[in-house]
Structures are given as structure tokens and as C-alpha cells.
Image (cartoon, rainbow, N blue to C red; front, side, top):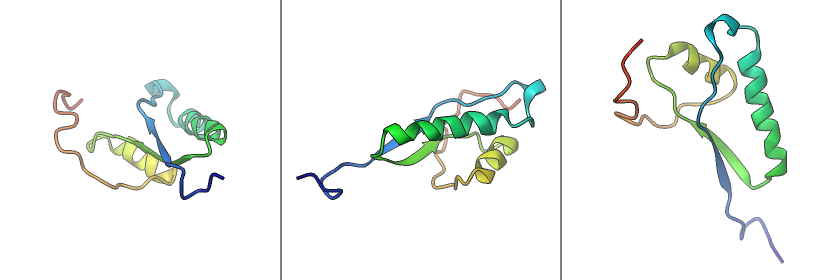
Amino acid sequence: NITNETLELQRMYIMTLGVLAPYRNKGIGTDLLRKAISCLEKFPLVAEIYLHVQTNNCSAVEFYQRQGFIKKHLVKNYYRRLEES
């Protein structure tokens, strides 16, 4: 007999989600994110979704906050090889 206490919950990682500049602010990013989240119906053990965002990418940070994501951790030097655009 399997119970929720014996199951190991899993997490989904969003590695990349991007929309080309001319197509931004048209709901495409929101649609992509919603589609990814809706796919989780097939994976009931996924209890959390997480991702990384450059802290200086204000539009991306604001996008994910509008979608209900919250900042949990700051990973210093995660993007250390990237230059600010």
C-alpha cells in the first residue's frame, strides 16, 4: 500500500524559456509557461517548479513574479561567464 508519506516528491526545473524581442508582451511567454505547467498533470509527484534568472534581467524577474513564482535563493556567480547586455 503506497501512501503520500512513502512517495518522494519531485521538482521540475525550467532550464530555458525565452521569446524573441519582437514577439514579447504578446502573451507567448505566458502561454509557454502555462503549457509546461499543464504537462505536470501527467506527473503528480512534481510538487515544485524552479528556475534560475539573471538578477539584472528585471523583465524576466517581473514576468516570473507575475506568474506566482517567488525568490527563494540567490546563487552567487551562477551566471558568472555572462556579460551584462
